[in-house]
Length: 363
Image (tube, rainbow, N blue to C red; front, side, top):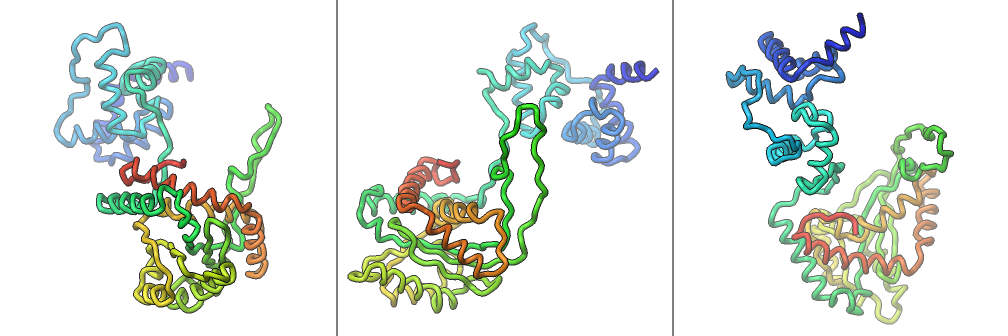
């Protein structure tokens, strides 16, 4: 008896499901309720939510025809122009559509679908979405391009000796405990062994804000705020920048801060009148930075991720322990890596121009 029921279910057609959707529509069920009902009774056969919504809209507009619109005779070659166009229309309307949903909608085999999607017809692939910092408007893209062009021209595509005069810095939270990522937890196991498991841990509540500055020649200074405090223009000019200037002067006994080009992003504490006035009075020249451009900030695309990877999985009971570990991680960075960061920075500028100001993949 069970096998007969299973067989009858497998014989259901698209028209059958459309009829069920229509009945539930007439019973004033919502789109989601219809979808969940079909999934409950036909988990392996039911149409996707997007398909249910499409037919729901048809019924709302008074179209109760359950059959597909008539097509001109379909050639025996299944990956013909008609099928290719149908597939293109489906993936354009719903970029998240699955293979199973494509099979249901087109009544084509998985092999044919694979040929249409990945061979010369469409040449598409399904990728995970890439997180970006911001949805850039045209003016912001132009600002990014202008910044990159001006920097490349000013520093002769990175070949100018003046690159060594650039001082860049930014602030970031450092946690007393930041769990390892899944990538960092990978283990070698035998071929038939089950995958290892790991208890999910949360970040600690305790954290401390640090501001770190460096040059192509290496680390300059790191300044911490009080517990859980954030950077303000008052603290930045009264506490942080004076310490950075002192550190520069100790590294450059003959020239001090003369010629130093100060670079930071356009956070409010960095662009405040008080900060601009302090930098001008101190004799520090500043380099601009385009808005929403962490991918063009050396601290964000290189230093902070590197340091945090070194500290992940370790617990610090006090800020003093955290400080010691942070400075050790900074000290472990080879001298040539600081220079490579600046090389990478100028490479990123070229990439940004090539991408017309858009965010770009890793280089």
